[in-house]
Length: 279
Image 1 (cartoon, rainbow, N blue to C red):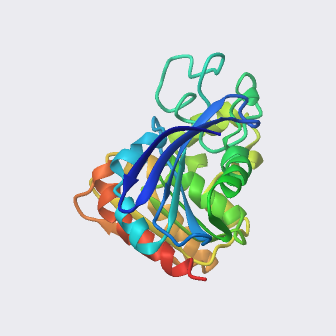
Image 2: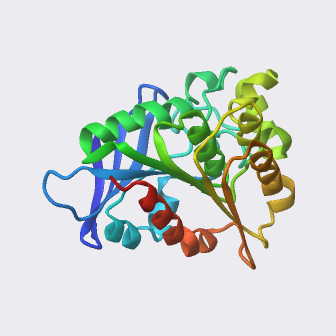
């Protein structure tokens, strides 16, 4: 692991790091905020998964999480959204919603993407191992949240690993990618035509198929331009209601899909996570 930068913030340390990934076969960058803490202390960790076109830098620079993390004693980790570098294929038409910056948190099975696009294994296995070895995290106190495509990743990770994460939340998540254009393009491109494989990366389908989590928090803005076609939070509400899965779904008046929205409610989400991450 190589340190790219370190900055003091709210008494803690904001770092950016890179390493050679065994899963993606590329160099991967990620950021970690470590709050002030006593020597030898092990701290809860919150994983943040970003949305389409983003890198670790978007939330690191615009997410406004450090004040709350310093107050609450939370480590905050933000990985990239896809492999990058020479030889990594992107969308043939250079579209923003597939390929580079749009790994969709799956392990691709379709050529040429299967060689490098292994973001599911990267964010649920490789990076947690690296972070646990290098930072003062308590592996028994983990939670996960994300935005848009990253909200999709956070919800599916929680539903598939309910014993690992104590809390899960999302900002404007893609809750049913099997049913919306962004998801159909990504899941078809990375996983092929096997719709059963898609269901393992679809929060609504996972709930329909029996996956459960203790409770979920989801915020969306009613001025989000992607709300009706791509996000469809009503599908998550219906699935949770039918399954008896506790969901707090909040409609935030006047907010859009941007980091102005995310940063406004970031503190709320982190306090919600901190309550569930208490020892």
